[in-house]
Image 1 (tube, rainbow, N blue to C red):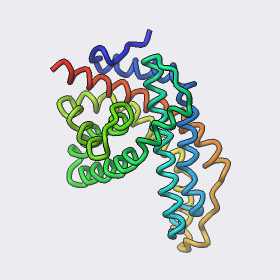
Image 2 (cartoon, helix red, strand yellow; image 1 turned 45 degrees about the vertical axis):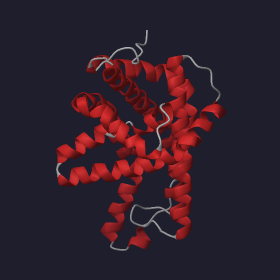
Image 3 (tube, rainbow, N blue to C red; image 1 turned 135 degrees about the vertical axis):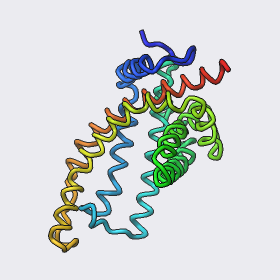
Image 4 (tube, one colour; image 1 turned 180 degrees about the vertical axis):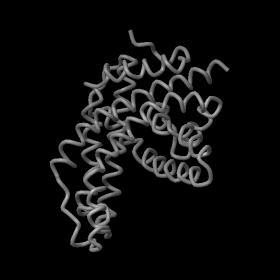
Length: 249
């Protein structure tokens, strides 16, 4: 039986086990919005052109990218809501969940941009601050969707929630982080090889290859959806763990 993280704080091992069980339980309910998000995430690269070093940047490309990011954020918000419904037993349609995701889309998108900026600054200054910030700020999307936090509150709430036990969250999130790293390498492999060919030839335009649509818009979104369903499940369990710890102190 899946332990509900709302009632008590789970140890690290039990958190990972609960995350895995939640992943298996929620996959049928969460897969569709996450798959849509992964497909939309691949659109800007396919639109801009092939090759890691041959991407064309224009006003249209930037506009398409921003719109895709907003839509992607809405679908991730819907997935988080569907994930929570699997725990609470609420019956909610994909349309209702997407409506909630749309409401939180701007907060999720800007929170994601700020999250990446702050985390990378932390890594540039020193590795440890980057790890800490990457952990304590990782729950901003859950705060935006599940607790209806506003744009300016999401990152602050996530940090305040995770800071007292950032080391525990780092240990729990290390598993999905490793899975994401492996997925990113596989997903980026054509671009990596394209960049190698471009650098080797010395002619970026000539070496740039068109994107493989079946790979970027077909295969990888399916794999990515499964990976992200697991990541979202583990992060959800830890988010509820942190709330349980905060409520008991």
